[in-house]
Amino acid sequence: MELECKIRGLMMDPVTNMPVVVLKETAGSGVLPIWVGVYEANAIALEIEKVQTPRPMTHDLLKNVLTGLNVHVQKVVVSDLKDDTFYALIWMERDGQLMSMDSRPSDALALALRLDCPIARMLPSRCNGRLPGRRLARATSARIE
Image (tube, rainbow, N blue to C red; front, side):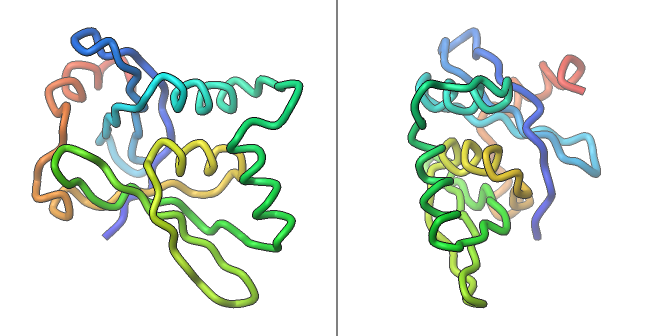
């Protein structure tokens, strides 16, 4: 089962000094922190803040290619957690054919922002009940909501 989410923000993990994308459930109070690289966080931040770059960035190029090929991105889903690494799927439709593409969550989220498509995550049971950074999520939930 999937839970629809929105990107609630970006923050820095004070322990690892790495960026964290915070997903918040749209119909609940749950949050999911996902650690990403600095460049990936920058790609997400540029779109959140609607910063125009002089030339297309990688995710802008991907958006343009998909649009040019008449591919509709239906949603992105943070789908799994293996060995403390999150996985995502980009669900696309072209000519009535539905397909999914494996992706890093940071790339899927950056693309979802550019295409204004839904973001979802699997229930924690799909991730074996383990979510990295659960303590961070609890510690920051008051500030995030």
